[in-house]
Amino acid sequence: MNHLYFGDNLDVLKDLHNKHPEGFIDLIYIDPPFNSKRNYNVLFEDIDMIDTKAQKEAFADTWSNISYYDTLEDLKELNLDLFNFINALDNVRISKSAIAYLTTMAIRIHYMHKLLNDTGSFYLHCDPTMSHYLKIICDLIFCESNYINEIIWKRSDAHSDSKQGAKHLGRVHDIILLFAKSNNSKFQTIYNPLPESTINNWYKHIEPETGRRYNKADVTGPGGAAKGNPFYEWNGHLKY
Image 1 (tube, rainbow, N blue to C red):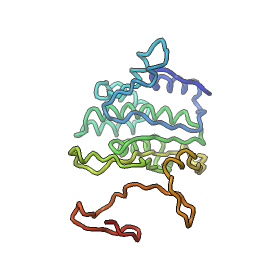
Image 2: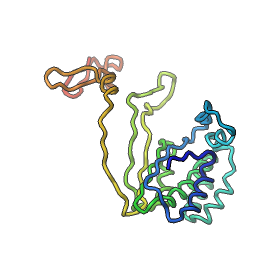
Image 3: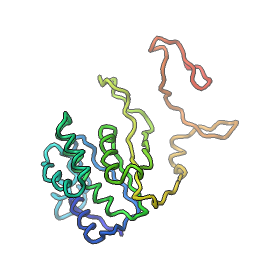
Image 4: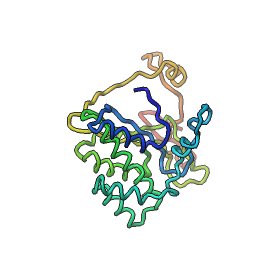
């Protein structure tokens, strides 16, 4: 409890598995770097640590520069289904950086599964560029029957870059995949109220009749004069 491990998490996972082969963790939530070629090496930049090289290497999202063949061979011994799936992707037109990323993730999720209690659960935070592949990887590790939910983590506001020439709709969500270790997994539904500061900052306006708070924000929808329509209706209201 209350330990911060410093370095490559695969080494830590293997060490914990050797010490606790039966599993001992109730819940694992991971929010790994996405397959984005970004550098995530600033987590502990302002903390006085003797060896920052290890943390910089651990938080560098440079999947295209790592050799994944050795890891694939390890997976062949650990989980043949995983090996066959990733090896099949490696033989079709999927980028090598994506294969390296999935291989890197697969072996770590394998050991995380081993470390969970029989009643434990696993949350994987990812984005839509890799979530469909990661779902299959988790199916092969946890078993399809232990898949619980796909949770959508939605941003409060759209961050559309169409004005800068992007030809896609606003990307406004991430994905969290929830798996159970077994049929004995504990599941609790917990809803926490919004913090008072969030309510006061975002929902400043109050309806006199009901006392309900609301926020004045842009309503994104079809129509409008800019699109050739003078008005459109939404929720019983006309928008001009």
